Amino acid sequence: MAYQIEGRMLEVCTCKAVCPCWIGDDPDGGTCDGTLAWHIDKGDVAGTDVSGLTFGMLAHIPGNVLKGNWRALAFVDENASPAQEEALLSVFTGKLGGPIADLAQLVGEVVAVERVKIQFDVTEGSGRLRIGDKVEADLEVARGADNRPTVLSDTIFSTIPGSPTYVGRAPKYWAKADALGINVDLQGHNSAQGSFRFAG
Image 1 (cartoon, helix red, strand yellow):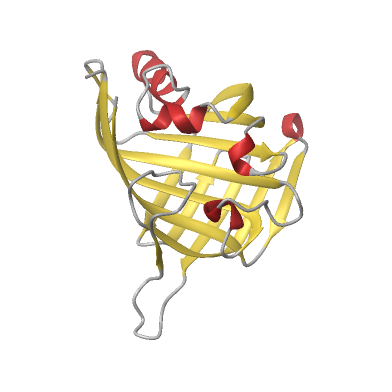
Image 2 (cartoon, rainbow, N blue to C red):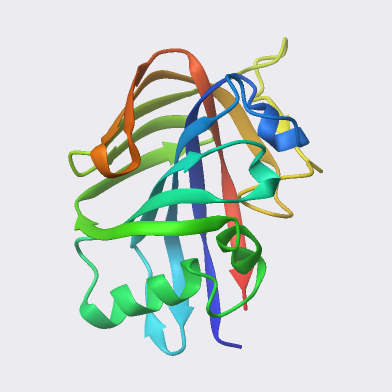
C-alpha cells in the first residue's frame, strides 16, 4: 500500500448553503470558486511520515463539478520537508491512486504550487482556515432543532468519499488569486467539513 492518511477536510465556496455540487447540480451562478484543505492528523506516504501537515487547493470550477476542467492553485504546508512535499503532491495529484485520484482527475490544470503558512483549526464544521495571503475563511456549522450539527451523507459528489460531512455557512470567505481570476469576498455562503481516511 503506497499511502494511508487520515484527518480532517474542509471546503468553502461561492455557492450558497448548501452547495448544489454535492447532489450533482450545477453551482449557483453557473461557476464556483472554492477552497479545499485536508489536514492530515496521521499519515504515511511510501514510508514518509506526513502527520500534522496540511494540503490546500483554491480552484475555479467552470460548470458542473462532475464535468471537471477545474483550474487550481495548490498549496503545500510550509512546514513540509522536500520529501514530505513530494509525498503530498504524489497523493493529491492522484499519482498514487485511491479515492483522491478520482477527485484529482477533475482538475484540468494546476497553475502553480505554492509553499505557504496554513492555519487549519476546524472541528465538527466550525472554525478557521488561513492559507498564506490567498485565503481567509471562518466556518460555522448548521444545526438542527435538537442543536446537533447538520450532516450530509451518501452524496453523488464528495471531497471525502465515504464519510459524512458537516454542512454550514462561512461568516467570512475571502480569496484572491490573479492566476485564476479569483477575487472573492463573501459572507454566509457554503461551508462543509468532515473527517477522512484514505488509502491507495
